[in-house]
Amino acid sequence: MVKQQDKDTEAKILRAAEHEFLSKGFVGARTTSIAETAGVTHAMFHYYFRTKEKLFDRIISEKIALLKNAVIESVGDMNDSLSEVIRNVINNHLEFIAANPDLPRFLVGEIFSNPGRSATFLDSLHRIAPTFIAELQDKIDCEAAKGLCRRVDAKMLMLDIVSLNVFAYMAAPAVNVALCDCMADAESFLEMRKAENYDTIMRKLKP
Amino acid sequence: MVKQQDKDTEAKILRAAEHEFLSKGFVGARTTSIAETAGVTHAMFHYYFRTKEKLFDRIISEKIALLKNAVIESVGDMNDSLSEVIRNVINNHLEFIAANPDLPRFLVGEIFSNPGRSATFLDSLHRIAPTFIAELQDKIDCEAAKGLCRRVDAKMLMLDIVSLNVFAYMAAPAVNVALCDCMADAESFLEMRKAENYDTIMRKLKP
DNA sequence: ATTATCTATAGATCTATAGATAATGC
DNA sequence: ATTATCTATAGATCTATAGATAATGC
Image (tube, rainbow over all chains, first blue to last red; front, side, top):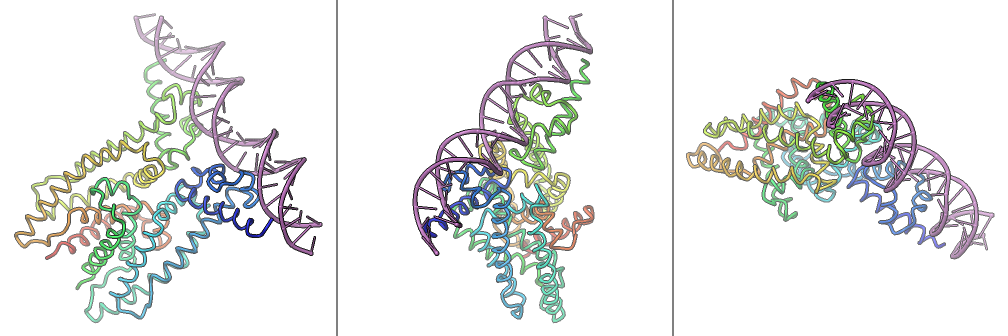
């Protein structure tokens, strides 16, 4: 068999698995459905990835890498002014979520349903978050000393930003029902939330 | 058999099912585990509730009723000032979430994994939300006309409030890891978020 | 006579593997 | 000789039911 064919089958299973796991979680996902969606026999699933758990780990690792890159990039240049850093974080974070709308709910769901299976994700978070929070706190304290903003807690500020960005996407069906299809036009909703959340956070910081 | 025994078995299965469904969702929940946790034979599960789906519907209906009451009560008196209404909504909503920390994630997870199964919930939301949003918008417009606050969009304001209140509880394990166990003391975290979120929202409304 | 409970098992999935077969690279 | 693919099926769960048995109310 040509190498191309090989890559194809493996890639097709990976793509099908990504969709199946993200939309249904580990227990809800069926390896038979994955094989069917990929258009290969079920035996191929086990030939390429041995077990359901191994393929799940692979998918979750890919998603963590994606998230990690997004987080690191989202910060941009820490030498920028506080308002620029916040604008970057909010814009990049929101764009990442809009491009991966199933990811937050998936991660949260898996963490709760099986802490062991998502240990890798929590480890990554544990390595990255505290450093970033500390840098952000320095920046806030520095601008506060010059009277440019209030001295707020960086941890709570980050929690506010992430909450404001993520929740609407995590609860999209309910939000759309409660707020008259306000997310129907994805593009304009995204732009609106960028402006809205930046505004909310900057008002919170205003002296 | 005495009626007491009857109620006991039924109630024990209900309590066990509530915990199983809320923590693992519909597909993750096992009727055998529910019977085991309840301390009854598995046949009793089917004797009292016939099918897994019927029991699930019953649990979800109970939870919706609970949520509906909480929402209606949370508003308090619509004749209060805007700031009082907002304080009531935030405090009551946060207390409800803290008392039912698994509920938001459960509802969001079930809505995405099976829209049909959560139609009841979305129907309720559809009946309640628009009315409340409209009343809130009136109140905002009224105070804005007197120059007491900015004329903000009630829909976005509600989305902000719910996001700020709910997200930390939905993502508790990740939030705790990222923000150094800030939720470890549940009581003080709750009080802190009440003050913090009220402050965030009121600054957003300030002219 | 009715209601509650138990044991045993049918029937449906789902994950995983065994073993045969076909296609490629050397 | 190795890699990829298929068919068939084992083995493990899980939901649900059948049918017998015991306890209550009338």
